[in-house]
Amino acid sequence: MDFNIVQPTQPVTPNAQASVTQPTESTSGTPSSKTKYILLAALILLILVVVGGAYYLGVSRQQSAPSKNNSATATTVTPTATPISTAQPTPTPTNDPTKVVNDFYSTYVNCLQKYFDAVSKGTSPAPTSCPSLNTYPALSPDLISKLNQVKGADPILCAQNYPNNIKVDNAVSSGNTASTTVHTYYTGSGDNPIQVGLTLENNNWLITSITCTNGVE
Image 1 (cartoon, one colour):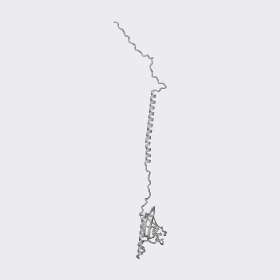
Image 2: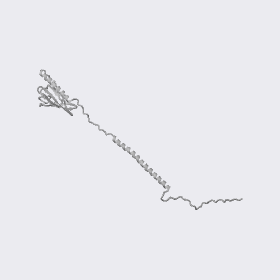
Image 3: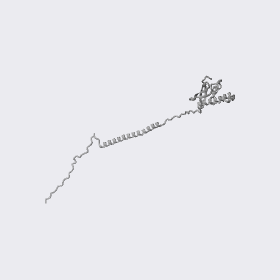
Image 4: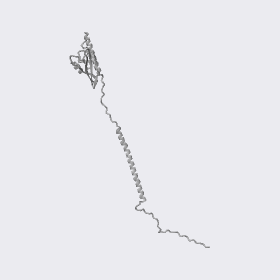
């Protein structure tokens, strides 16, 4: 029999001189991957620093703004102290000037009428039947002193006799002074007006002047 002898195939030996592909070194103008990572990290860090700084400044401004607003509000709402008035209220007089004059003249004239009626009938009472001027509380002490020095006509009525009737006008007051007119009516001569002045003393109206308008002094 014929046999074909197959020769073994020789293993291929790699050529030691065959070129092996080496990694291409980066050129000097292109950064390496490591450099890129470092730059990226630095950029991220810079962004974080900028963002963090901006946030911090914003929070600081927000915290300082309320404090300023609060201080301004406190200044605005603080009420201004109102000074307490020390002025005392004007007291109300215990009497009325018109009534003071009317009561005095009515009492005075009534006493004279009774006195002269008694004299005309021959039953004249004692001279002290009519009170002296010192007993009239409506007259001021200074006026009483002046009236007691008057000689002749009656200084209260500005006449030698008493009137048939009298009428007192409403007094006009201004501050602590007042004045009124007393109309005295006589038969045959009509009205004989008398000016009366008053002064408010110790919260009480007093007659301080009597002025005759008919020339009698």
